[in-house]
Length: 571
DNA sequence: GCCGTTTTCGGCCCGACTGTTTTCAGTCG
Image (cartoon, rainbow, N blue to C red; front, side, top):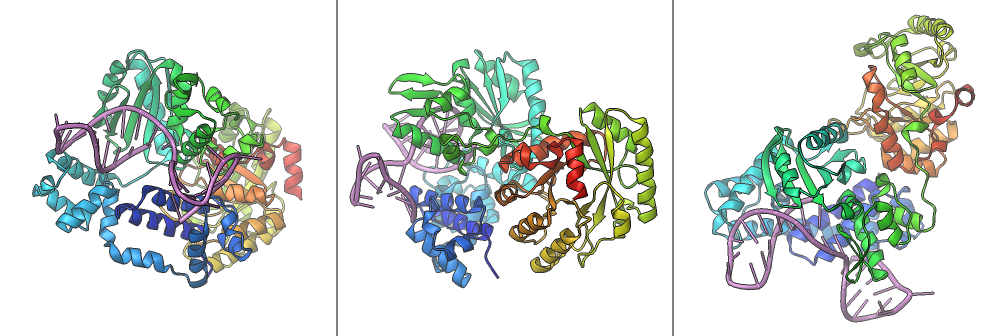
């Protein structure tokens, strides 16, 4: 059983955590973290790179980590990790999940009090035992208890689909209540990561204290963690941590760059700055005491002789090198999208008629909209049989005679059955403008079976698009076991378009596979899977995913004008 | 542990806020 990049990355993240707790050299810890991150974002399998003897060509992977990768691939185990695990009880690592508890505190309470679980930590805090330790006091004890409560109530990360609208709402509230010059959500929200740890909002104002006062008195604020002149952190009623930073207007660009991250991207940038004899902070780019940039992000990147880098790329996955060589992709934008190819109507489980959806699409400036209702295999979604599908197609044809400025395409979202066959006759499918095939059942099949099942469906000439290819539901259900690499190869070979399902729960194909697919010449469609008019606006989440996957307009079929799109479907 | 058009050794990004402190360590991003 081959070991995946994600699995190898997990091993190195684990090593980093364990070394961190043991008080190892922090740079060594970071080296493992960095290796994990690099491996996670590779677009080809580490195993292949290993077989070709190119492991140490990967930046951040040296002799020692390369040997560990080799051991993992050859034996499926890593003795170094096993030794480390044996020296620290698993529960001690769990303590790091408590906000306010870092490696030093975790190790301290384990050594002095034998604490090795969150439950034991809670008990010790309640009994006032933590305050007896050096460096810890009653206040810390209280914060740890609060942290444990928060962890239990809300878990760790929030999907972008929740965090982004909420951040936008907070921005509106702050604008109404405080003297604000500029305001912008930063952090992982601005990078459009699929899940968000906390919400960062950057503000410029000449009266920072008033902004902070307005912020902490918002009704959604449940608890204030820290409040200063430049930085304030709160916990909201929903349990999301939210930070507001206020800076002077002439620092806005530097601060926005800094607070957008990612941490890895910033570290890399600062290293470049250092090599040039410069220093970057959230206040600007400095040569000695002289500030040479900071008002805009363009200025900051410009000071390092780099073009501005779109936030979605800022993960230190090669974007800085690409920028330096003038090879940044020209990322797809929402305005490039000419139509949505995956929408549902009252004919299955949607909430609106075909006409209502079509008019809404026209309103958005689209040239076309694809109707792709469910088929009979999906009983819960009122899936249609052959006869109903053809009736819907007739209705669409009539509608097209009546409507102007928008073309409705007759499609379907056909189920890929357990054995890889489709649940609708191919003669019927052939009469439609396009066909999306998706998995909606038997999610728990083993990897080989699931992969083969999906490939078999893509093999059918009548299938144009593979719907939500990995089936994940962010925060709710893992992707089904499927070999992304094989999926992409087969999509390219069979000319099947990979969907980037924009529904915020899905964002599927995930960004990393988008990028891997682009590398192999795959084509994509960004679709919302809308079940209502409102949901057509979710397209922005799909575009974000595509952008994080380095995709350009040319990679996306629904950026094509209608006639060219239809040519692709007919093929 | 990684890395090198100054280096194979000695660096490795930078700052805010808090709590427990008489000057700073820990955590966070």
